[in-house]
Image 1 (cartoon, rainbow, N blue to C red):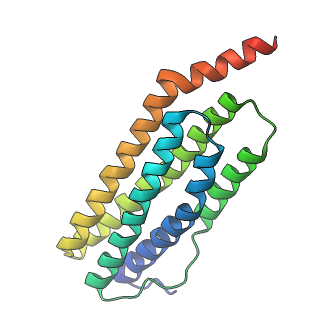
Image 2 (tube, one colour):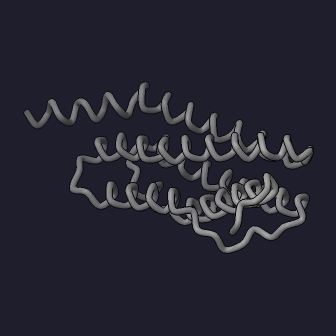
Length: 169
């Protein structure tokens, strides 16, 4: 894809985000299965449903923009998902793995927050009002998920993981 115009860049951004969301739709069930903390498992399951909606919104954005989303593969998400899969396969205490899963999930959220912020700014520049609203909605949900993950880590999971280390001493 040649990036000669801001329209080209916007198309690239939403195609990249769409690929990222599709990859995450495949990864989240594995993360939920690996989680042992009930709240973390439920959070991954809830975010899976949100992620499906995020992909649908990107389809609506592309429709308003008048372009297909294409077959681009988001290599950043591919790497983040691969790191999460490696974490899942590690020989780890359950509560330590849960803490690691939160970190992996937050890296994903931070990537998405950056991507949706960029796409929203480009949509605004292009005067795509419906796209701006859709992208803002998803951006707010990604930020909320990040905040929930932080709260869960700080309120329970990290303390439980810390206890695992003390029990082994």
